[in-house]
Length: 456
Image (cartoon, rainbow, N blue to C red; front, top):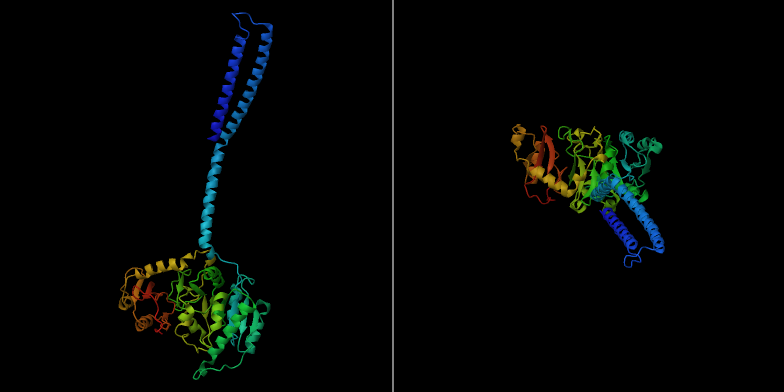
């Protein structure tokens, strides 16, 4: 528009000057020295000739300028489409950049990070630690990003030799304090739990304070890992790091028995208020919070107490990424024969680092979770067990007390214990599992607000 206006102005100026020049020429040629119709003298003819030359020069100059401006205008017009395309591209680019900035500001915390996360293997006297170490080494994508540290307690020589046989593939550290621990009266049979707690404190201090790592994945020597174990934790590290409502990521589903989980949803993840352990990730800042008050024994149940949990949750999978094969231990096989040996280990590699995991954000997750659970029809145990439910589900069973929860859990073969009022794998009091191929939620009544720690 500006170029067109300039062109019009130039043309007008040229015409104006040319017209006045011609007018001057005509007047000067017709009337110079005119007195009563006398003829034009030779001097006037010479002057007129000079004026004509100057006028022609002036006209030629303006004609050249006019041609130049005309050429410029034609060039502008010929490139008009290019200018318009450039403007569109600049607008589109600005829009893309704005969208990218918005995306980065809201999603950057969910981008997998190249942070180094060591695997801390807690060992004692199991020579079968090889089963754990062999799978870790087989599936580990990078020795630099996932160094393996084996921390050994007990001073068991055969186990130490097995660990040492791996050479530079791992780092072998040994708990220096193997002394007996003075325990309260009546706790002599729990001596092993006291030693485990002491070992955890020492080993985690080594990882965070001696080796100076910012996060750690903890496994025990009787755990076998799934093929996407590392992928799982790598993808979830940024979420754990930047979400203050979370305090751990676990590879374990307490109710993840064969038939109780959906094999078609190996990528499905949950928030849980129950600390699962059995392959879990911890951040240094959380350890700095826990270490000064670390308990003398039963550290895992201590972690489940409200004073430690502080209303924070963990992430857990639908299908476990770890499997325990240690029937014998300080727990004397508690839960192993009835539950743990039936846990399904994931066999399908899920590319979690290329998956949108933003649905795990608490606000977004809670809204979808409550809608899913409490829009599900309320059914009875009899209807479910007698296969009288129509449709694919989900369906909801309701409990209102600790005994009613335990009754429902036992009816369907779920782990029925409560820790500080929180059921295993539960979130907001809700436990999810599969029965006869249908999704079932064991849930408290609508309006649930908090756990009752007396439910234990």
